[in-house]
Image (cartoon, rainbow, N blue to C red; front, side):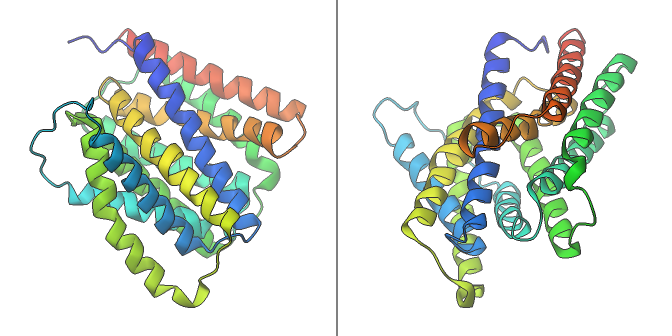
Length: 285
């Protein structure tokens, strides 16, 4: 079977990276405005994602469902990622959080990819180095001395997301698997909200942002990601996620009226060029 990364896979991957970036923007927006507490954001995100996927699964046009074995590890990783991601952004700046998150994802997915014997050429390592250098250059103004608890939480979020992604590489039905993972994660989210009931606060705006993040950017986005993962090697899947901070940065320009800087343009070019080198090399391996 060919491992070539075709147009369909690239399109699915690009769409997913946009959804990931949207999650970062929505979470920072909601928590930055204190429109909702972190535990509630994570719980509403998981619940709305589960509801959206459940509704889609029960549409008449949906492919016939097959018996599915519960993947409790994937569900647990999804919950841990959502929870630690939300709490980490209470104290971390956007740039520092992105660097920690995707640095941890990189290390996790590369470790498992190389451990399983996936080849990685010298040119691919060069592309990865260029992309990582661009990422560090992009976020370096905000990288000072991150708050320890926030740092630990975001690293845990990155590791959890890396494992969750790896669990999805062999699924037969991405929609069914993602829906099942979300449904299994919802009770854990509710338990989290009960644990932090004293911090409970939300507004209509905060709930709306969390619902959009869960139903659209997370629920639907993760289905597309699971579909793309079937054609991506772990090392390639890790590398392409470096594009998320770039997309999020330009999303900030468009949606939050942030300025376009020369640093942003140079860093974005480096990251995207590095990713292009890796993906091209993987498509010929």
